[in-house]
Image (tube, rainbow, N blue to C red; front, side, top):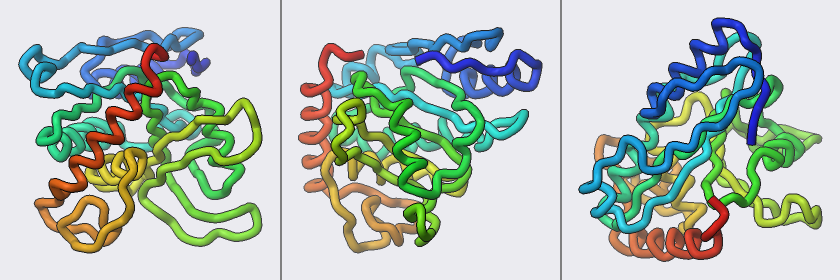
Length: 232
C-alpha cells in the first residue's frame, strides 16, 4: 500500500529516522511514499537458520500535524524484545514494510476507529502493526478504559474486511506489548503471574512465555504462515 505524505523536510526527516531505526535504506517521501520491501535485510544467515519460522511485519506509524505521533525508537525496542521471547521456539519477526498513516489515526478510541484501521490491513501475508498515540476500549457511546495494546480481528459481515486482523501499540506501551499481542494473535489467552508475558499485570526484568505457551505460539505461527502463503 502506498500512502501520500507531505514533502517538507520534517516529513522526510521523520521517515528517514523510522526507516533507519528499522535497518532500512532511506526512502524519499517526495510525493508518493512507496513502501519499502525489506525482507531478509539486516538479518545474518546464521540468524535466519536458527529461526525456522520468519514472519514479516507491516508497521503503520500514526502522524499528527508535522510530526510522528509516537516515538519511533519504540519500534526497534519492541521487535528486539519480541524476538528475545520467541527465539527459543524458532520464531522471528522482522519489519518488511513501514508506512506513515494520514492524519486522524493517532487516537484509537471506538469501534469505528478500529474498523477504519482495518482499511490499511489487507490479508497480505504480513502482520500489520499500528503505532498510535492512544488506544482505548470503548464504543461510540462510551469510553471504557485506556490500554497499552490491542489485538483486533474483524468478525462482521462486510466482505471487504473479512480475514483482516492487526495489532495496535499505544504510545505508553512497554517493549513487551508487541510480544503480548502477538501471543493473542497466535492463540494465547491471558495468564496469571507477573513474570508471564501474557499477564496484563506483568512486571519485572524477566518476563517470558512458558514452554507450553511457546509450543502453542509455534503452532499458531505455522498456521499463520500456511494460510497466508503466497500473499507476501
